[in-house]
Amino acid sequence: AGRLRTWCEGFYAMRRFVPSLLRVAQRKKIFPLSSSLAKSLRAFSSLNDPTMLDPNYEYERLRTNVTTPEDAVNNILYNTPALRQGPVQRRTICALVNNHPGVLVQVTGVLAARGFNINSLVVATTEVPDLSRMTITLNVKKGSNVSQAIKQLEGLVEVWAVLDYSDTAVVERELLLIKMAHHPPGDDGSEGEVDQKMKRHAHRAAIKSLAEVFKAEVVDVGSQDLTIQLCGKSSRIDNFVKLMKPFGIVESSRSGAMAVPRSRINFEVESEDLKIEEDGVDVTMLPPG
Image 1 (tube, rainbow, N blue to C red):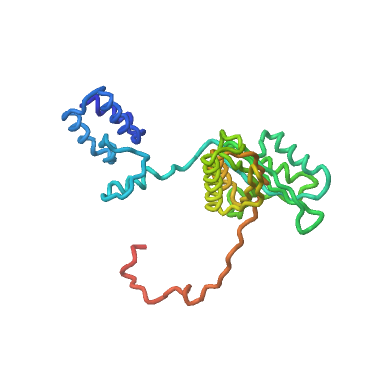
Image 2 (image 1 turned 90 degrees about the vertical axis):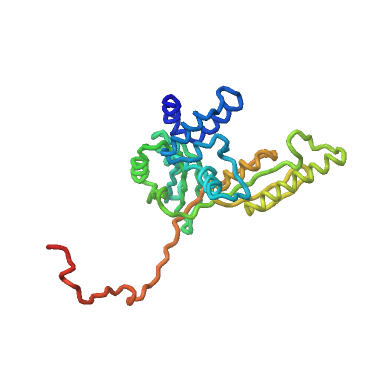
């Protein structure tokens, strides 16, 4: 029991995998689940993780038609995606620059000198013909000194202002044009039998159904492929491309992220709601001093 307790405590940080290890060990007959082992597992109830004591529980598997509170809670706890906190951080920078030749080279040169790789870059004129707006997204490592690069960009003659939207509530949109094949991967697209045609029809129907879920539009259809347009956040487009990949992507093109700050909501609060009641206060109920 002492060895087993030490072993389980060592694996407590990996509590999701302990039941799986016990289950595999029992199936492979590495050791039988004897009464003493079950008693030792019950003794570990102080670990505040009752599901770890159940070797028959399967993690990361969604249970339907649950009838007990334990199954319902486990569905929520162990099937919720974990928060990704990787070493790479996404930064969004907006720069207002003069609409002159060579400005783009100066801006990208500053970022390249700092060792930053540009993930996407969108440049277009604004409502003022002589002013252009750049939206730059960077994937930088945590702890990178992006503020120094922003100050260096602000020092350029052709740059009016540089804004960091990384910690600001913004409206972000990106355009995707993706071309999908009519036939499944492995099919050359030539005329075949009826079964082959039915498979191609089901393949096209699956692509259109998935596009409708993401509110994408089919903008062009050919004899061998179709083109889909999707406008949304960059993360949404990433997920759409990943789900479309098994269906056979012919080619794709992305515009890059564009962002503007969210609009403020101003409203007036009635003064009556802000009045503080200044009724008589019992001095005897106040603390000393």
